[in-house]
Each structure stands twice: as C-alpha cells, then as structure tokens.
Image (tube, rainbow, N blue to C red):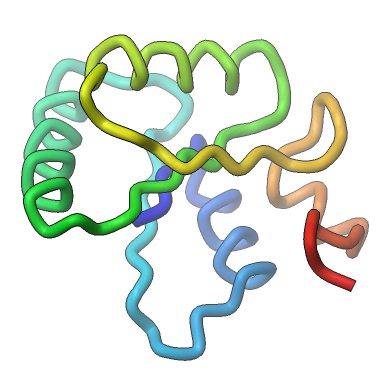
Length: 107
C-alpha cells in the first residue's frame, strides 16, 4: 500500500514505480486528513499489518509532507512504515514524473 498526499501524486508514483504484478494499492489523503479519513486509515493499517504487507508513506518532500510522516509515526507507533520522498526538497511525485528525474536506486 502506498499513501500519498494528492491523487495526482498517487498516479505519478504508480507510473514511476510500475508494479508489473498489479499488487500495489494507492491511497491519497487529499491534502488534509479528516477524522473520517483517519478512521479509514486505521482500518487499512489494521488490515495490512495483520497480513505483514508493506505500507509506504510517499508524501511530498517538504515540511507538510514530513509533518504527515510524523503524524503517522505518532498515531501508529508500533507500525514500521517504508518512507519514500521525492529526491529533492519541495518536490512532489508529480514534479518527479514531469521532470523525469531518476529515482533513488534506479539508473
């Protein structure tokens, strides 16, 4: 599961990190996490953690994105998340796709 800030970032992340087995599920918080969204994320975390599925936080590489990461880490302190931020400060995943910049570990 990959959680992004905006739907366009989730789509961009999917394009950049093609899952040839179609096993990845993408979620977008829409720029602000409401109480209802937290409840949905609670269910997602509970379901996926019991199945040992990787949950990736792929937020923007900016102060707001890092704040979201902190919120997730505090709320779900027992959960180990994979963190994947765009390579440069102030970027989101759509910026990376638009600029066609290489992603860490890819040539």
